[in-house]
Length: 207
Image (cartoon, rainbow, N blue to C red; front, side):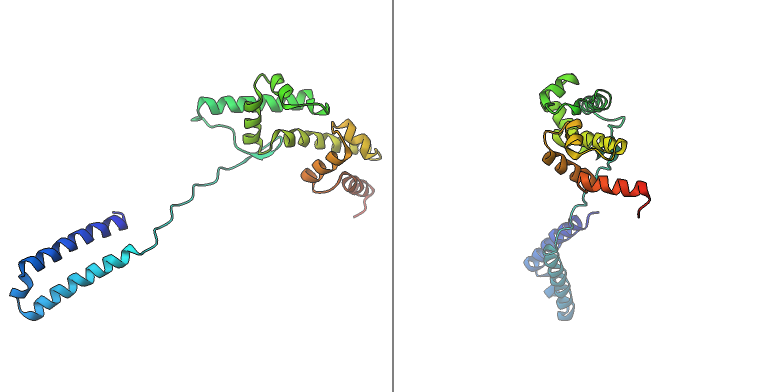
């Protein structure tokens, strides 16, 4: 039985017993020592019950965090399981179409790509596409697109380490070097130039 439920029941019973004792005068028909013992016990139990009311409630256990699964664009929500609802399965299908479109058609290379056109290409609407990209990848649409652009930029630098960053940015679909630098630092932890220098040093065997 739950501790608090037990205490509440005990308090109710004790209160009834004390009321009965005082109204009937039963303890005073016994030897004074016996009566005193009975009354002392009852009041002691009542006192314990009153103290228990001041106890801090036991906090409810926190629900376990939903484990993330590694996708093509980082760690996000896992794919729906067998017991998933229709809406969740549909959302995941939209997300898979979005991944397939990015990987096969490379729309991110177009610097004018926007959510409306992207949603049209994956046969859905802007709100639904944005919602499911955010849920399954853990990124908003802009970050989702920039992730692919940065990965493409990395492949360009590896292919030709002497490319200027302005060229790499434009070829990867970025509007400007500034936005390219910001996105690159977000996903790689360093600027494109720093990454390029480290890559060249590694190729030369410089530690």
